[in-house]
Amino acid sequence: MKYGIWRHESALGNSAEQTVCLADFIDKNKDENPVIYVEHEFQKDFALCIRNVKPENIIFYKNISGFEKDMYLPHNVSILPKDIFMPDLYFENMPNYPSAWKDIKTLLLQFPYDIYSNNLNLPENCILMSIRESGTYDKRVDGSMCEPERFVNPEIFFNTALHFAEKGFKVVRIGDPNQTPMPKHKNITDLAITKNKTMLDDLFLISKCKVFLSCDSGVWPMAGGMKKPLILSNVCSPFRSHPPKLEIVNWLNQGNTKVIFKNRSLKDNTKEELVSAINEFL
Image (tube, rainbow, N blue to C red):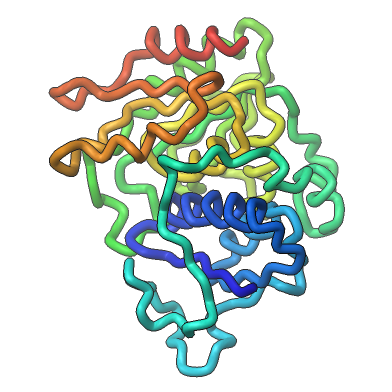
């Protein structure tokens, strides 16, 4: 069967949500030979992680006759060929079992261009972080300053990283290469600004980390879909709708997820809040 991952308003977040839903759908329907259509290289890496998806069965939209280069598909995806299936986001009904995913470490070692197989020695069992910093989120259709309420102060995350690095924990930051560099410390790896890394490196770390500290943006749905320990901090996007669209977070596994909302004045969560949340998973 043919499936699609589209890029709506934001690249990583919406693509990650779609990938999680597709992984669940393919797993439940026991599709042994799925074909995934993608727009971008990072979406190919997302699709590669889905069980039963073969590299040769990932096809770029631009290879379909009539599709425009670098297009952005709308929510209703009405221009998709009729034989390409794209499920609705149905998080409220989705348990998403780990069997929906491949072992990403095994997957990484199949690709010699990848940073992991080039012996960077990415630390397993690390504390993983992802930050949405003002003006640096370069993969959005609507610009790097869109939805400023979802930006966070990176210094709070940096101080949180230093807190655990000083205690001997390995801390890794993934994300946008344009962001402010992390503090220098022997126990901190700033993969976000590392050259030649791929999305598979990020996904490997998500699949192997002790806990993933994210803000309300980016690749975090992949951690939720894999049922990895996840702290989703500074959450405010459900309240952009009335009534609040809480299904954005309610689908997450309550046993290994902690959701921390921004307060009504949209102030960032404090270092103390983040440290306390991480300690619950250590």
